[in-house]
Length: 194
Image (cartoon, rainbow, N blue to C red):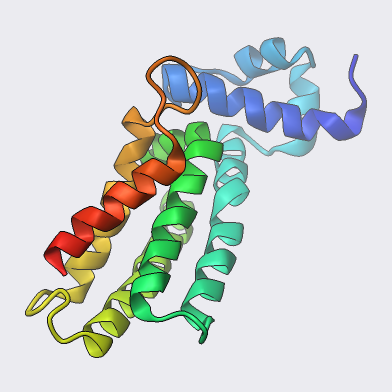
C-alpha cells in the first residue's frame, strides 16, 4: 500500500481519468477507491463527497493558471502581441500537460452545486477578462489589429481555439504535433486577421 501522503494525489489523478472517460455520474466513490487501491473511508478522509473531488480537480488548474496569466498581463516588457502569444503558449502548455483535467472540467463542471459552479464560473470570467485586457492592449498599440472587433469576442475566440485543442492535440505518438508548432500556427492565424 502506498504512503498516506500520496493517496490524495493518486485519488485526484485516478478520479480525473475515470470521470473524464466515463462521466461524473457514471463513476462512484467505490469505483475510485477500487482503482486507487484504498477504502472508501480513505476517500472520505480527504473529500466530503464526489463533488469535493471535482472541486479539487478544479483547484489543480485554476489558481496557478490565473497567477501565470496575471503575470503575463502585468509584464511591462511585453507588447500586446507578445502577451497574446504568451497566453496562447500558456494555454497550450495546459492543454498538453493537464489535458485530462481540462477535458473533465469542460464537460463535467455542470455537475457542481450552484455555489461551487459560481466559483468555477468566476475563474472562467476572470481568465477571459485578463485575456480581453491583452486584446485591448493590442488594439491600442496597433490601430489595424482586430480593427472594429469586440475585444471580448476576440478573447473568447482565442481561448476557445486553445481549449478546443484538448480534443485533438496529441503529444507523442505517430500523429503528434509539437506544442510550439501549434502555437506558431495559432499566432499565424491571428496575424492574418491583424
